Image (cartoon, rainbow, N blue to C red; front, side, top):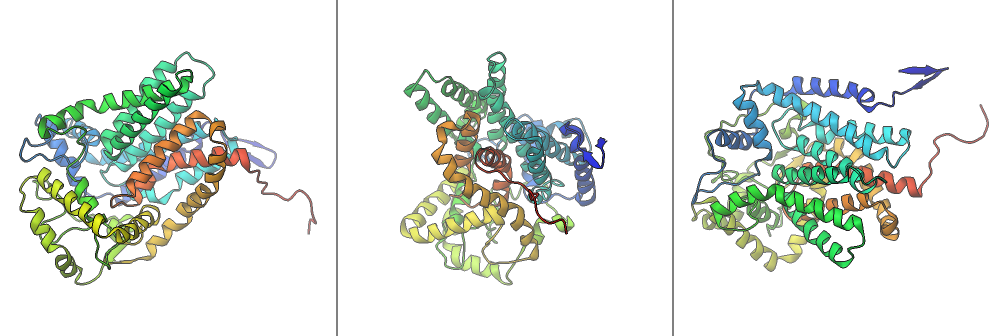
Length: 457
């Protein structure tokens, strides 16, 4: 690090610039991780153990496809090599650190060093991501993959040189596909992007970027094809990604006036189809990063849930297999939407609040911890709203890589609002939103933090 006079000159190498954050993340994980298994962690261990035994889901009729194999493959590698699981958690620090580096390299193509540094500093301090670091969950890996995809998209679409473009198209498609295997909601994004880019390319084959976008989407779809072939062999259904989507949709469509569409665990039957597996599930005690510290249920809430949902769950659990139960969830959910469209709209608005600010939840009181989310996410949301109009007015003048990212984020966020969701959905796509904001702001706004002149006293 060099100094010029009294001014401190920051190193321009992002690996050095943000190295203190890597050390900070490692400390956070070391302090707050525990040997217990919490919540969704049990799923990934369950599927990782299955992979080590030569299969992923039990065969029909007990098909269980709660999530894709992207993250269980990584967990299985650690289990197979008998690597201490603390290192798997510490890997989250590396993934998030690398997401900062990748975001820096992406934004630097559009913005000045100062702006790029400030935005990446903002991302490095983004609290919402911290709570996932001590856990064996997919969010931090997904953030890393999304950030890697962003940089590859700039190399595909924005580079003046064509050599190497095929390589970047290939890797962009592979990573896009692996994101879907890690978070299956992105599978639907890939399908939409595939159809959309195909139509664009057919409409005007002279535009090279349309062809590149179609190739990326095609390779992404092909990357997920082995998993989709596997799910088809088990279910007989095309593009079948998960057996839990109906559960999320069901809670989102609840017509009860005191419920806001948030996911809940039904007291009698458990949280989902793998809640009774052989994987132990303990109580995570992560201090300020404890998921349970976000909010608390009202006393006696279980009685209210039973009163409101017992008939539906009696109907759902007449079926014994996860697929049949998933279908039953969906049938009731679509019936709720048809009979109570206004309540579904109200729940949809509440769902946006949960995605952005982790509020409101059904039968829960909020804690002061919710306030921690407001400032940083609020800044992103306000800037997003500002950027919407310039984006619409100047769509064709925006770099194609940014347009691809915007469409990907729009499909992802739009789809995520339709079923019960949380802040983790927003966190995973936040790097894309930051890159878009920087691009638009650099084209439209000039900000000076120092006054040009004025009294010295």
